[in-house]
Each structure stands twice: as structure tokens, then as C-alpha cells.
Length: 104
Image (tube, rainbow, N blue to C red; front, side):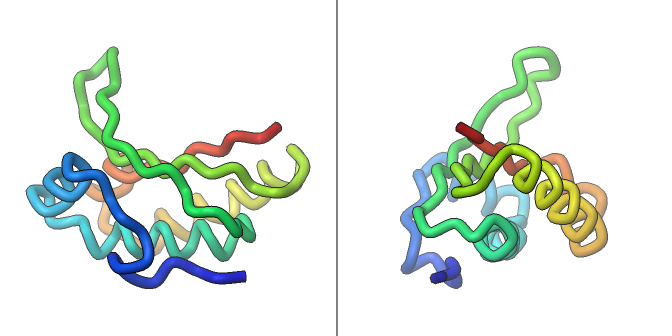
């Protein structure tokens, strides 16, 4: 399994880069990408986008993953990832980077 370790391994869309630089969260994005790749055993690059919540108008970076596992395992790992994420980053970063799972 290969993990994402730097900007040279995954090309981010310009709007995501701008948002992360403006909010000082680019290092946290790389941390989230590495941890998500490890936790969900992802072998494909995630889709990383900037999305606006239609109810609050708040922007967030979305890491969209398709983990190669069943629903039960993916949900369990998502809970583990979330616990680790909340402990690893400042509170104001938590909602600005979100992981979404596409479980098929």
C-alpha cells in the first residue's frame, strides 16, 4: 500500500490549494490524506474538492474515498479515523477538512 506523502504525489485543484493556503491548513490536508490512505487502505488517489455547504455557505475541503471494503468495516474505520483526527488537529481545522466515503 502506498500512502500519500507530499504535494508531488497528488495534484490538488487550484481552488483547494488557495483555500488551504488562505486558511493555513495545507499541512493538515496532507496529514488527513496520509491518515485516510492508511486507515482505509486506499490504493487509488482520492478525489479532493472544495465544496460549499448549501445550508451554511461554509467552504470545506472534501476528501472523497472509495475504500475497498465492506460497509461495516468502512464505518468502523471512519469512527477510528474521526477520533484520531479530532485529537490531532486544532478545533478550528476539524470542519474545514472532511472525509467522505463512497461505499459500494
